[in-house]
Image (cartoon, rainbow, N blue to C red; front, side, top):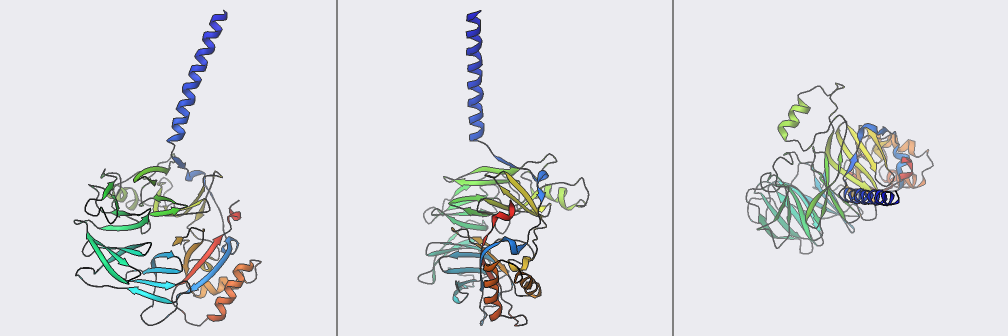
Length: 392
């Protein structure tokens, strides 16, 4: 009997050790599930969201009228802007004063005709060009184009500088949807995601998000966000809902599942990330096309909620209509854009009655220079830090 107990104990111990080993392996390869079903909707006021803030009007001068900002990057004391539907890059100081502009328009060498995207890497700026399907390198110190590469008929939709490489989202579904390139390997770039069914042809304008030295990628209309590490991509988190998600759908499937149905039907509960997301102080802000809004997730606090239709009360103080974050620097400063229209001045009056001293100080400084009716039409860059306490 005593021997039987010993054998039984050994079997239980052995079984437990196997289970523990499996659990560690599962945790090691764990992909975080984002469950939108259980996310509550939260009402947020921009006045409560601001911890500190600075308004940077882009000064209006000859040939610098900007209707909408499509891409914005901050490097040191310089602001890089690509206006929407324009093949030009403006470089401004951190006070909104024009320093330089890059508009090498043309079809020849070191010229571009249809600028898609850009990224800044140290003293160089890389530009993706659709007209001649190439990438150009601009020297910020010499203020001139110095190099170009053609990618054999491949169009680079979006790109970002990360750890001495340029990560590119391309249209090359058959050979590698994500390219990793640098000055030494343009003729033979590293290609990732070689399964043509893995991604569709829809690429969001901002599929990358940098957070504390980590690069995350979601190209849009796919339910998985990837982590770039050691020259490869690893699934990091995805939307896993009981009623299903648009899982790595091709364009044809997306059209069938989304466009051809009445989106107001209760049974049409498909989950569609737009491929536009940012990470601020541990909070993920993931723009959703279906359901329309912003899914906010904090991994450490195990908390998630939705901002309905992406709107916040008095949003004009920070952004135009939808909370779209343009850029986040290494100090967790957020950069958005707004405009001095009627909705802005209306929200400003409410803010001046609040107890938010940082916001009121910034508004006084701005409105003294640009009072209501001044006719200022250029965008205003909003540099601010977020009060995450409002999410508790």
